[in-house]
Amino acid sequence: MSAVFDPASEAFTRDPFPIYAELRATPGAIRHDGLGAWLLTRYADVDAVARDPRFQRSAPPEAAQADA
Image 1 (tube, rainbow, N blue to C red):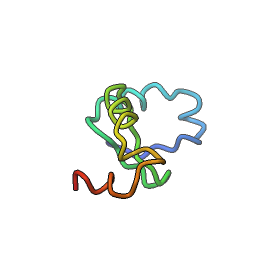
Image 2 (image 1 turned 90 degrees about the horizontal axis):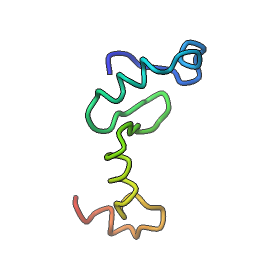
Image 3 (image 1 turned 135 degrees about the vertical axis):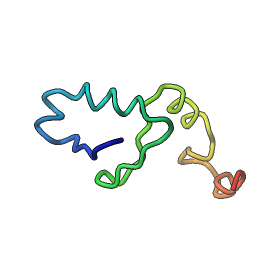
Image 4 (image 1 turned 120 degrees about the horizontal axis):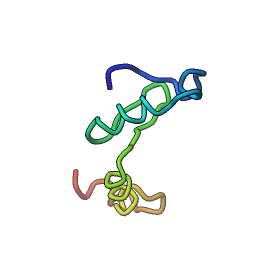
């Protein structure tokens, strides 16, 4: 992404669609340090993470190391 965005900013609240388009054009996960989170903006990426047991709260610790 060319610029860091602030989802709480007035500009983003007023018109988020240019940022959404830019986020969708970026492949994979995007780290947003301001939010302290990873962003997934494509359905296929969200679906893959939602189905992966390593990302579930109830996943045992060894699941996170399975593909390491």
